[in-house]
Structure formats: C-alpha cells, structure tokens
Image (cartoon, rainbow, N blue to C red; front, side, top):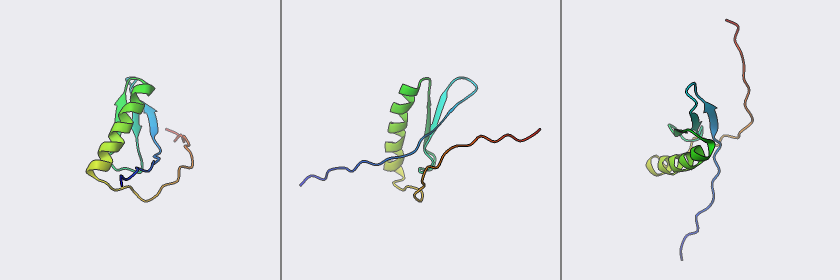
Length: 76
C-alpha cells in the first residue's frame, strides 16, 4: 500500500532587504532561507528550500509555536 504523505506546516519570516529583495527564512529548519524579487517567487523558492532542507538534514528544531513579531528600537 502506498504511503500518503502528511502535510506539514512551517512558519516563514519574510524581510525586505536594502536592495529590494524579499528574504524568507524558516526558523524551525536550520540554515533554511532563500530570496526573490517578488513575494510570489519567494513562495515558490521557500517551498523548494524547505524540501531541500528536509531532504539534506531531515531534522526539525524543537517544535516552535509562532507567537508574533515585534519591532524594537534602541536609542543611538
């Protein structure tokens, strides 16, 4: 009997760098990140990156529950 793959969910943190590139990283997967010029392209690339990270490393950091994002500012 063929094994049916189960769906897995990963949180992706997305930032916009100084040159206008979207940079996506997956906190639950060590060294799993990519970049793209558009959000649509980033989505495709991050899915590929997740698959590759799981294939190469296979391990997921301890289960992290996404809570939110805060921006803090330090006085200079």
